[in-house]
Length: 153
Image (cartoon, rainbow, N blue to C red; front, top):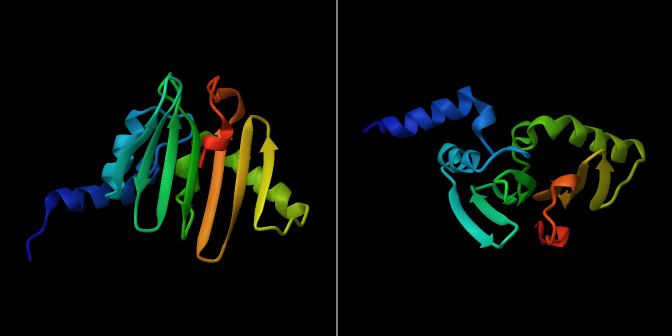
């Protein structure tokens, strides 16, 4: 059995530095390439326009879309899969706001397959059922002019 040093190194980095797993909300374009390498994920630029670029990362359990504005900063993330990605990593500094939004949903005893809530500048849409979860999260004040939030999927 031949050991592949590059694969061992990627696994070591992924477990030693979990914040490298996904580009975080508000992060820059360079983080997306790191994500693909660390996850052994396929990476495709799905759509480009004058105001936005969508990157797609696919693993066995989740498909993550990251949306970049003209400033090359991630203004929105969306995922769909059998499990959520590492949310602390994906949401970065906005993770606490996400937890607050989820806590508000739970305190209101909202029991639907999908829910929408805003906390400060953070817009959160969550839903799913066992075996399929999804979420769309964006920074309200960072949505580029001319971009529809309906396109964040």
